[in-house]
Amino acid sequence: MFVALLTYVSSFVIRAPFLSPPTKLLASLERADPEAPPRPFFPSPSDLSTKVKSSIGPVPIDCYVDAYVMANEKKYAVGSPCDYCVALCSYENEGQLVPIEEGDEILDRLFPIAEKVIEEEFGEDLALVRTAQTLTLVGELDLDEEDEDEEDGDGEGSDTISEGEGAYEQDDEEEVELLLAFDFEEREYNLVRMMDPVLLVGEVREGDKVVLLSDEESEEVLPIVEETFMKDM
Image (cartoon, rainbow, N blue to C red; front, side):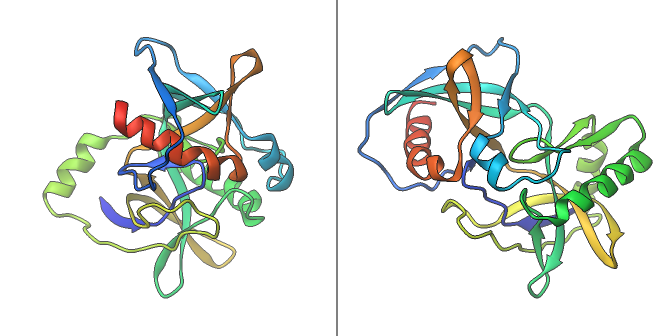
C-alpha cells in the first residue's frame, strides 16, 4: 500500500482533528440514534447551479448521522459517509498531489474514464460514484491485506497537496492511500482513499431533508458545529 499526504479540505467537510477558532454563539447537541438507518445528504442547490455543469452528478451521499446540532434556530446533521471517501488527484506544483474538485470542468471528462478503470480493475466488487461533496467507492476493499502490506513496509512513500482557494482553515495535510493510477489526455491521475475521518454537515430542512452547506453557509456555521461537536461528543 502506498501512502501519501493530501491537502484536501473543503469548506463544508470536517476532518479530524478540528482546528476551528472558538465562537461565543450558543448551540446545543443531540446525539443521533446509533441504530438509525443511513440518511442521504443532498447537494447544496447553490453549488449545483454555480459549479456543476454535468448531468452525471453529483448525487446524494448516504451518511450515518452521528449527531444533530441546533444553532441560530436551525438544525444541522453531522454525518459520516457510509462508503469509502476517495478523490481523483494529479501531481502538480513541484510534485504535490492535488485533488480534482467538483466544479472543475475536467472532472466531467475524467470521471467516466476513472469509473471504467475501477470496473476493469475490481469488477463488480467496487463502483466509483460521483456523490455530493466527495467521491465515494461503493463495495468492499481488502483492507486487511493492505494493512499487512503496510506493516511489512511494502510501498511506503509520502507527498503533499495544496488546498484550494476558499478552503476552510484546518490541517492542510491529510494522509491518503493510493489505490491506482491511470493515464488520461497524456497525464497521469491517481485515485486515493481518505484515511482520516470525514464528517459532513448539512442543514435539516423542510420535510426532514438534509442538504449540505453552501460555501457561504459553511463560513458561518462550521465553527459553531465543530466547537459544539468537540465539546459534547
